[in-house]
Image 1: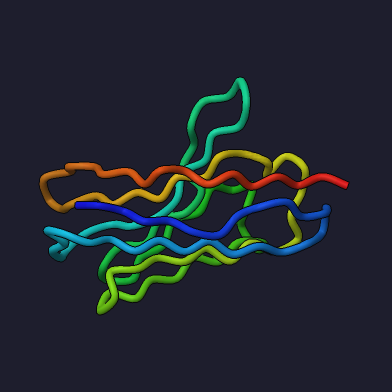
Image 2: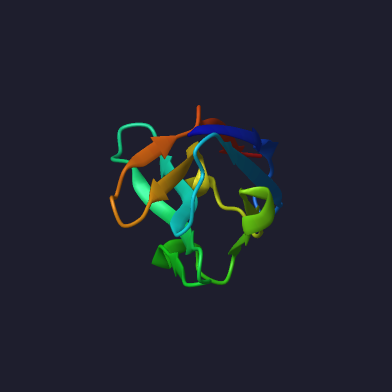
Length: 116
């Protein structure tokens, strides 16, 4: 499985950005697609994930600000990020998890910087 992510960049606090990621290769259902992030000096954390069946998980710090969506037909996942805060600054990684095996695949990472 190969993952190609796009989006990210520099935005002022309170602004919005969107990320997208498309999986190719041996993409089978069921699966999970989503986003992790890693800020400087911190561990990588799950931001949002969406299962094939529609179940969604968010880290508490982004609830009500970020929205994940998934197009199973296009093997793509999207992350709409609103009301961005400086603490959202991180490298965001798209990931794909094959179920039930749990095999994980990662995209190349895209930098999101929230700063005035």
